[in-house]
Image (cartoon, rainbow, N blue to C red):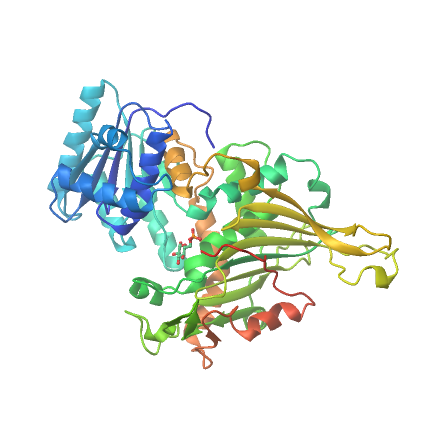
Length: 504
Ligand code: BG6
């Protein structure tokens, strides 16, 4: 979202400073921003948590994280030393007012040293139960008042349902102005996801086709090979609908379906996106029955290794009713999209890790060529592959070289790897930089989060109240339950998968 301009001096206070998210994502992202020259000249990163560390010990833990997870590989000793001089640790208890006073003192000291008021970014990389107490204590310590300079970053999950999301929004609104609140959905920071907007709104080619007259259906599929790992306790209270559909997949849908914004102002873009959510057809009990599928994985084999079923995973209830797979057919009730189904699916322990959006165009109105010339006829498709392959493909029919007239589908491909030589920034780099620059375009506004919850609530309630008798209903390394195939097959389509060579 940015030009080469750097942000003002910035202090980051990272709650959950010793946690996994900081080690894997935030610290590597900040370090890479530093390497690429995006960090302001004066910055400070204050990690905080309950563990007792000296600054030196803390720096070492971050270095371990960076060496393991940074896209740029192991840290260069000279650059790391220069970067790490701006990294500090303050052990704290989120309930203890003294800790907040100490943050205040540190921030004031930086302001005095730098002879300017810095931006202050409070990053909540903690479990959501702590959001309210941290926000209120920051406010009590008078650390939130400067609406221009102070920002708060809230990690997902933002609420557990509509009611809790509303409560959290209300609590935050009592303390912060909306322009200070950065609700993260890391999918929006992904390079390929940002490119959906560039692709749609910087080319004149697609807009005339981008509607119900030419588009037959849309698929958004985010499949993962990963199982639970250490996250069973969080996931068992969440499930695929809350964990992925309510946020990441619906955000992707908004980017595909939104109207063209007038400009690149963050609220203009976010207005266009929230309009999509508002236009989405609410689910009746019949819709939940007929247009949704849930699944849970059974044990099986993945790449030669035996893997446990969901109910056998650590910290998961052995009788769990939590879905690890969801496939849902949505409609957007407006002029552009009336009658065009949007099929979303996501799941764990599936055959392939891939996030792909497929836009299938309507068939030609009249077939000029005899059927024997085109045995492998396929309708035009635009395939936006978000990960692991980063590409946009337009599938068209073409004549195979030769003396006979044989048509087959071919791909016109824009492939990041083949086109650009520079490394792609991680989503968190983009989002952290935007936070420093005060650009909220790629962050969720309060009303967006609530609209997304409102849409999924009928499904969530039905699934919660009615235990699935068929769980577990798909085996590891499959594409999910058969009913998910049936959901889309009933309309005459099938789930599209890219023949990927690399797996994640
Ligand atoms: C997170 C979910 O938000 O996104 C995880 O909580 C999921 O369950 C992850 O695995 C997927 O993100 P990515 O960037 O790996 O596609």
